[in-house]
Length: 250
Image (tube, rainbow, N blue to C red; front, side, top):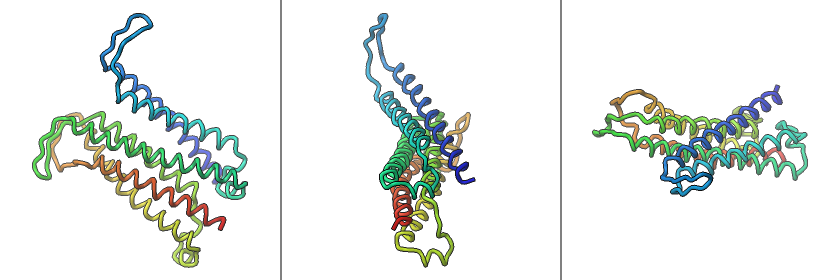
């Protein structure tokens, strides 16, 4: 059951990464076509698009992660949590380094998307008075915020699924080693940060999922704060993964 759960989640992550990479590639093309250009048969002169560059680069990174993840776990004869810990040191280091890289990449991408969603939202017309504001919704901010939410959740589930927790009761925590206690402390902070970051991103994203302008409490900086917390989430997720896996061996 554990192996099936891990396999299903790995498939979901690979599909999500590839689909996100494809969407970013298409959006990069759209951003590039918005710039001035002159085409004559196979030749053209055009202005570069920084937006297209960033989206294209993000698509490349996600595609590489999806490909390496598929090949690493498919060609690996020790893919369950217990089997990975019984594998050779070289394989453990390779798997561990790649897991850390994927978690960091997902969280950083989620953070960047959250900040870009805030920027897209601020480009719309709005009127603010203290804690209240009237503004036009931004479909671009909604899509970017939604993508940030998905990537943050994937990074969190991946970190928790591959790290595991074998000492979760009150007595077991007090009897656990220092390394295990540090891993549980890191786990606690990852959940707290996840809750706050998700709350910020969901509120900011939902505010842009409307057809017409609306008035209410200001959601200013919710998306950017949620994006910044994604960066913080990556730090504690890596700390949790490293301490959890290390405590099993030492």
